[in-house]
Length: 309
View 1 (cartoon, rainbow, N blue to C red):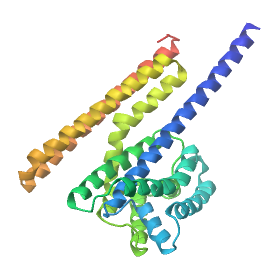
View 2: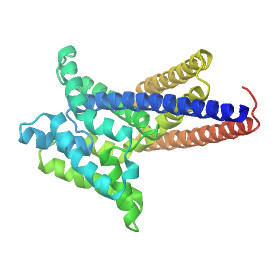
View 3: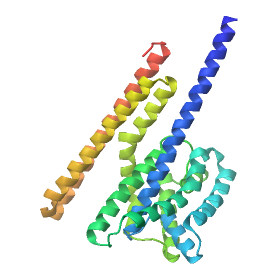
View 4: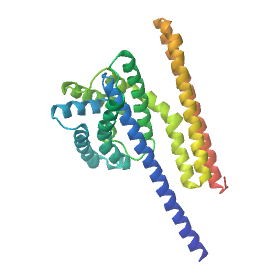
């Protein structure tokens, strides 16, 4: 009788853990999509291009005199059918949130931008829009993807093709982005230098956010789901706040340094600074991953031994 009661309690706890875990991951994905959409709006207002998929949708929606959200939802529905046929494992809550919300949220945030920001397009505004847009777009993408609740319809295409042909994923993804970029260009979409930047160089930024924000947020969600107490919730929020403050402080310091020192550098000196900065980032990223892996191993051993934290 006691064993049956313990089994029932364990099953109830597992269900509670799964519900809290999925709910919090869904909220994280939802927030990521909102931030991603805000970033897309800043990029759009800079008039230097957007990501290939959105750029294409803007071109066709303008030509057809349709709201962007409606046309993007239609395109996502077509891609969703392809994913459902060839690899439905790619589909999750995040897939539905992305395909339904992004286009409409871009419309909504674009209206807010126009209502609250009344500055003409000049070099300063363009720089602020581009930097803000890239940071928000890459952060939102990281937050949306890290909970592993399904890929967006556009992001799922390359992995599906890679699983059916003997070609590396990176090559297929690059070919996919180039194809959509060309379609966007001929459709008179929002194609520009930022389209190329997002298509080929957003990866390092996304990886940075993965390491410093998103992976740690997923870890805190997992920890809180296992032990949903006010203490764990508070410690998680404090920990994330410290991480966020550190990231913002470093970003501000680096931006100030660039403004004060790099303007007078020669071309070769700029290339040397870039290489040294990339090497430092790679070392930091490796160390961060190693520490996270070590911490997870320790926690798994503690869990295996049934030690109360």
